[in-house]
Image (cartoon, rainbow, N blue to C red):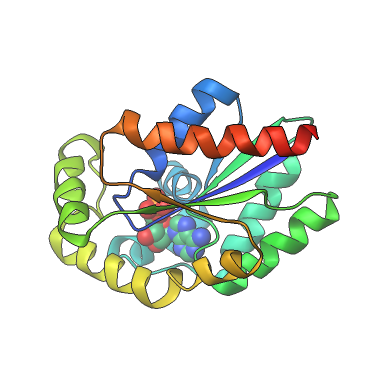
Length: 195
Ligand code: AMP
C-alpha cells in the first residue's frame, strides 16, 4: 500500500495535485480540512467545537485531529494507496501517523513537499476565495495561517527528511508541470516497491 503525505503551505496546491494523483492512480484522499468543514456544514457537535478555530486560521488540537484521522483511516479497506492532505501538521501528528500506519503493517512511502513563494501563495488564496467561499481565505486569516505554518507545520519536513522520505517539489509552475514532477516521484516509487 502506498501512503503519500502531500505537504506544503496553504495555497501550495495540495488539493489540486491530490485530484491529479487520484485521476491517474486511483488512490484514496484523506483531507483533514475537508473532514472538518463537513462537520461544520452538518452542524455536528464537533463542527461547533472547531468552527471558530478554523475561522481564525489556528490549528485544532492534536488529540482531536489524530482521533478523526485514525477513524477515517481505519474505515478504509483494500485500497491501493492513500493521500494524506493537511495531515500531519505538527511533529506530534507525524509521530502518531507513524503509529497508526504501523498498526496496519504499513508506513509513509513519501512526503511530497510543495514549495511556493509567500507572495504567490497569498495571490492564489485570495483568488481561491471567490470560488471556494472559504471563511478562512481572507487576508487577516491568511496571514495567521502562514505564520502558524512557518512555526508549527514547516518543522514536520525535518521529520520526513530524517526518515529519508522527503521529496521536494517546485510548486510554482503550472498545474501540469507540478504534476509531472510528482508523477516522476510516484513512478519511481512503484518501481522500487515492484523490486
Ligand atoms: P486545510 O483545508 O487543510 O487548509 O485546513 C483548514 C483548517 O482546518 C486549518 O487551517 C486548521 O484550522 C484545520 N486543520 C486541518 N487539518 C488540521 C490538522 N492536521 N491539524 C490541526 N488543524 C487542522
